[in-house]
Image (cartoon, rainbow, N blue to C red; front, side, top):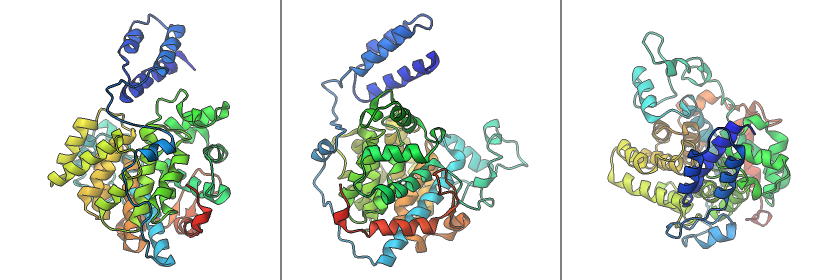
Length: 441
């Protein structure tokens, strides 16, 4: 590792440990006092950071093992009555796939952009507020350089879309279909790692997943693969891998969250794990109710009640009840949680709930709000779209959003490029219909 890379890792790790409740003041001071490229001192600082423990006054309880997580949950039904025919379950699963793809595609042109730039783009194009796929940057107007750089991305602009282009958010849903078909519901975190290594190129996974990939190649097994030299271990990577585990566990959120835990433990800890469990449980619940508050409540019942993620989600619920305008809630989210990195679990999960709550069940409005909030826009659009896609079912999703996909998805997962989305949904149904005795949480 080059000195500059190691220095960047130390800085990221300082932020991560501080967010976990550790006092990093002395370590920050030591880093500032390094003269020149002193690798020995830099490595000593890193080792010291790794030994830190949360302050005694840190108000959160955040275990990373399944037993510990479940001990910190609120009481709630772990199974919900499911009164759906096989055809109805398929419609909801297909809706989840389509909803996820369309939401992801909506956010793809503005991934990583702040809310202000997104609004500027839309206003320049006379398309604010967002109500369709992003328009091409106008050619007859003076536009900023940052917008010029995206003008060539025609395949993701309204009027040019012909399928779901490749995106890691969708690759993970596909790879988990492959995981369950080949390893079964008794898969382990080691199985997840092996499937990842065998089916996705190293440079097509990012942040925590790339670190876990490297750690696996170097001989580390879970849970060490999630923690060793991985300052991204509470970022959004696991949260975007949740969906398949919700699709195959309709009405059994505890089971979905348990499967999500096993997957997340490969690369994440604490709130990074909770994000995946939270989303999987919400999707599982979305098969049984159209009540957004109920779906969120089920999701929260599968993660620790005294975690930072739970606190943030409860804040968003409370703020959304007081505010009629989503932008007012966004400002409150940004004020309290905007300090997190743009691809962290907590702030982005807040934008998923922002869309769900202020969208009030309307698919297009919900994904648009989640995307207009900024940060990890394609991830947030995908998760919001997935939950509502399951809730409404494919037949009820507006053609404006799902029609341009032409039932096709590109993927870097080996053997899955240019798949029919409907075929993936049918294969997912086969897994969802398996006897619960074959499924293990």
